[in-house]
Image (tube, rainbow, N blue to C red; front, side, top):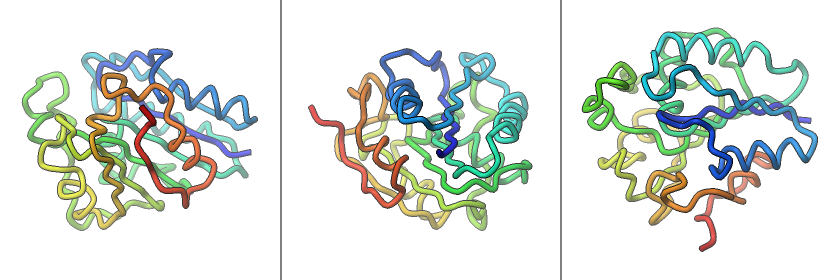
Length: 193
């Protein structure tokens, strides 16, 4: 059994059709421990509140299991803030950052401006971390590899035409993310049309 913590993004109320909901259901069916919390005030999030929730959910993951974090969109940036601040409990086995939004986008919205990513140069993730993003993500027009992957020194898998890897881009079910959760060496592919 592995333990998974799935973290959603801004304005995400965990709709049943989203790939994270689909993933939580699949992993649970396979007998894994899955935590997929609704973070407080997803339409107007508070960074400090979300950091406290992250720490609480990390602390609640069972001991002795592989611990995997899968963060989408704003929660990818939340994870980076937690790393920069040295939040307790970040010593997990693997982390997947999916479609993090760039500072140029976050700064335009007062509701999430506080989430503008911390300084990334010299920031070292405490666990093996993989970045996956679309090559045409409107929430990271500069390119996720350039903005996040290169400064963090982490591998980045860029999927052509995947946009923000959300429901609008057709990511309800997403077999590749399930395969990665079960085997961290799996490469990402676009969701079949």
